[in-house]
Length: 271
Image (tube, rainbow, N blue to C red; front, side, top):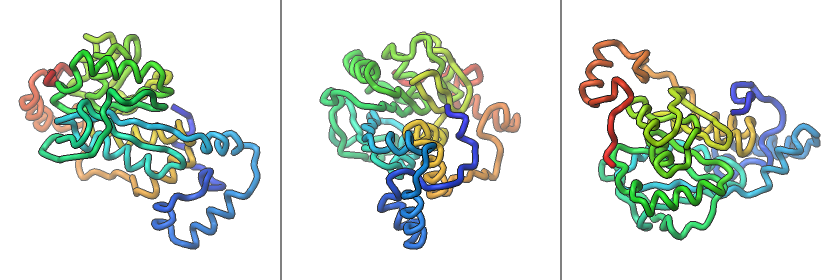
């Protein structure tokens, strides 16, 4: 990932000026300032400005029983970027019933998608709809030509099962992390992992961090940080139990019992 992710960027706002949604959030005065700032020439911004003019075709490959937050978080970030078209496709197309009965859609049919710039596979506990050979073949096909191949949570298991992650480092939900090995991928416990054109986020809430990471790749750190501020992503959880290494022993042990095999990163998803 770019070294600029944690830098404080100053100067003109992202190329292309604010979107309508940004304008509503920022107010008229801020919009005027942003428009004026975008007119200031600067060689250092030339590449970023040129890149922002190129449309990005971003696809979330979702499926029945998938986890909403895995893609809702990054989708929120992506909607704030200039010239990024977000699409959703699923094995059968149409409406998709996610975990807990949430109905999402409509979606395109995965087999009808010819190519995309970025493919992202979110996760879930029940991956069975995506683990069919014909569906995995389409995931592999789209991954071969995409500029970025990405995932959130156990979505990396789907990518790995398709053969797209052989020899590549990848994140995953901690409870399932070592399941990646059986498909030739290299488990990495980091919250965000970048291995060339492959970018992955850890479990569920890491999707927002992933969204900011891919935003920086697509439109630069300035645009990513603008999006972060617009959604007020400033996490200050009341507890520090989001990772087994940080969680109190009684909490950690209770969750291990809930999720068989998770202590070793070997919980089995429904395939």
